[in-house]
Length: 613
Image (cartoon, rainbow, N blue to C red):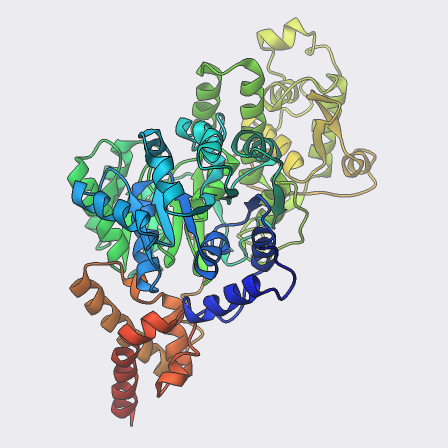
C-alpha cells in the first residue's frame, strides 16, 4: 500500500509511537524514512547513534500486517532489543544459537502461525536450510539489516556473513529492504548499496552530530591516573573504558576497583560464562564501569551510559565515532575522553603497513589515521574537526575541551609558514615525519636521497622537536590549511586559507602543547550530571524512583532501563504525575508499561510528596 503524507500507514505509525513506546513526536528524520518505507521503497539510512534508527523498521512492523525480519550482528543486541520490544507489548522473538532448542522451536512455531511482528536473526543463521521458506510462510514483508556497515570488507566491524544477504533477499521473494547504520563514509555507503540491495536504495543521510556528547582528548601522561580523575566525577554512573589489549583491561579494572569504583573487565579471552556475567551486570545495574577491548559495545543498547573513555588511541575515526556513540543514547548529557600518544600512532601505522591488505587499501587506512591524528591535535573545535572528517560542515560547538578553553593556544603563523614552505619545496609528496626531519635539520637517508638537506627550509625549525613539528603539520590539516589534492591524493597542497597564512595575510592559532606530554595531569572538565537541572526536591524524588526501578529490575532479572530509562524517571520527577492520565504524558510511558508499572511508580511519587510535607 502506497503512503502519502498523512496516509493511514503513517498515521498508524504515529499512533503506535505514542501508544506503544510512549513518545510524543518523531525524532528528526524518522518521518521521512518511514514515509519512504510505507511507499514500498528500499532504504539505506545513515543516522547517528541514539537518533532512533530502530524505530524506522519497528514502527512499520507494528503499523501494518506481515513479518519484519531483522538481521543483527550480535546475539546480545538481539536479546536486548527483543526484551525491550516485549516490555512495550510488541510480539517479537529471536532465532539464535544462545537459545535452547525448545526456545527456537517455539519462535519458529510462532512465525509459522503468523503470531510475530518482528523476528531477529544472525546473518549466519540464514545458511540453515528451510529458513527462508519459514519466513515466507510467516508472511515476510520487510527485511531490516542493522549495523549495515558490517558489509564493508575494510571496515572496523566487517562480518563476512553480511556478504550473503543480497542473495537472501531473492530467497525471501524479493522483499522490501531497509539497511541502517550510524557509521558509513561515502565509500562504505556505496559498498552497502551495491552489496545489499538488488535495486538502488533511497539514501537518507543525516547529520553525524551528537550534540549531547562532550568531546575531550588528552596526551597520555599517566593513563590510569588520568582515567581515574576523569571518572571520579561520574561515581554511581555507568560507563565504558576502552583499551587496546586484554591485559590492559584487567590492569585498569583492578586499579579502578581499588579506589572504590564498581569496575569489571571484559575481553574475548575471558571464560565465556564470566564474560556473559560481566555483560549482564553492566546491563542490569547502575553505576558499573566496564573496562573492555573494542569487542565490547556493538551489542549494547544501554541508553544511560554516561561516559566513554579511550585508554588508547582508537583504530580509526569511524571506530572512535562508533565507540563514543555508546554514551548518551537517551539524549541526556554524556562525557567522552580519549587518551593518546606517539607510541599509539606508531603502533597503528605498523599495523597498517604489516597488514596483508592491498596497497590501495593501505593508503586509505593511512588517510584515515591522518584524520584521526588531526582530530587529536586540532587547535579548533573538536566537533568541527570530527564532523569535517565525515564531510559535514559545522560551527564551534561549545561542548568540547577546545571550545571550553582547556587548550592553550598561540599565534602560530611563523611555524605554519615554515611547514607550508617545506611542503611546497618538496612538491607536497611527503608526510609529517619527513617534513619534521627537514625543519629540524635531521639528515635521514630519505632526506639525503631526495636532496632535501639542500633546500632552504632544511634546519629552519631547529628550535623545536620533530614531535612538535609533526603536531603542527597535523594541526594545519585539522584547521584545513593544508589538505590532499583532490586530483592527486598522494600530494599535499595548500588551501585558500593556508595560502593567506603563508602570505602573512592572516594568523592561525596553534596548540601550545603540540607534540609535548603534559607536565602534570590536568583533570578534564566533565558534563553536568543528568539530574543537575532538577530542584533539590526533584533530585530526591529521582533517587527514590531509581531505587524502585532497581528493585524491580532485580526481581525481574532484567536491565533497569527496560523498565524505564533515566529520561522517563527525570520526567516523572519533574512533572510529578498524580494519576494515570498524567502518567501517560511522561516520556516513554506507553500502554504496556502503564499497565505493568504505572501504579507502582505513582505510589512512589505520592509517598515522596507525603514525606516532603
